[in-house]
Amino acid sequence: MARNELAKLAENLDRFAAAAFSRAPAKAAEKVVADLQKLGPVWSGQFSNSWAIASASRQTQGTGAPGQPRSLSAPLLSGRELLFKPEIKYTIFNTADYAAIAQDLEPGVFKKIGRPLKPTLPGQPGIRSNGIRGSVGPGSGSAESTAPLDWFTTYVNGGNLDRTVEVAFNVTLPRTL
Amino acid sequence: MNYQAIRAAVENPLLSAFGALSPAVPVYFDNITASPANSTTEHVKVNVTFGITNEPTLTTSVDYARGAIVIRIFTEKGRGPARNQTLITTAVNVLETLNNSTKNNTGVFFRVGEITGPTFSAVEDSPLFVGRVEAPYRATVIS
Image (cartoon, rainbow over all chains, first blue to last red; front, side, top):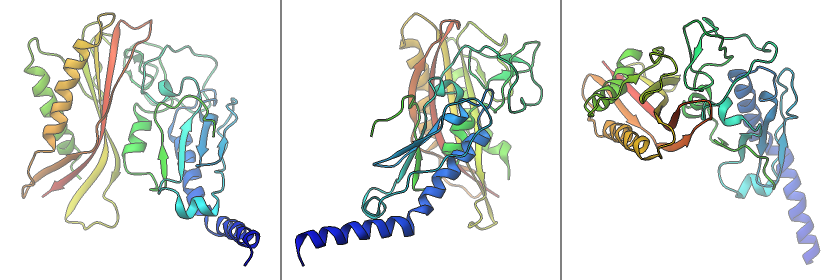
């Protein structure tokens, strides 16, 4: 068989495998993003709409716009990525500048603008301890939050993740692939 | 499922370790607000969270739970990371010691996964410097 025919065969195989099999890991990644949007804070919606899903060669990303969280489609894997690359097929991260604060990984400074798109937690408003977003306790303060403390850490470490997906901590800038 | 027993398995050793320091460092757990809320003195905040309870493939004779332990150390800002790191070492030592426990016929068998951190952060408005470590855990309640 001529070399160019072999190359064409490999390409066709790649297309076939991608079309036939790569939706399962993609669906797992999309579900993780949907979970993170559901569990995480939603005040303006910008954070919820800033999740990104990256495969080894492609990336899809939320708009970062305010509003209700919108579902995100994962990039399709090529046949070669599906068959030969490492077990982790997708990396999920948030591109908002303040992602680490929203994920309770770092303290921040908070200013209320308007009302949240998601209901605040019961027993609030209260007092926020030392700038940690979700650390709002009882008291005569005005702090409010729309997701429990350490929601992100709990989700990532609590055993909910599909084995083909990893969620990256502390990634605040879009990747260039 | 005995969530209290799981929580106690990690909270008690941490409370003892920080209480044994000189001077003792106050430790605040879930749903206990540091007093005052924005304390300017050093303290430790421990959050134990639960992810999955009793995966369906397991038998009913034991209870499993998975989750995360998050330990935040608050120390004075503008004095370098040394004090914070000293306290973090205490916390990490406790987490590592939890993995040395033996599996008995009753009680809680506790195993901590890889420890992430420490990470450090500070914001201008807060008087305190924050160090953070976290680790996943898997606990088995044996009865």
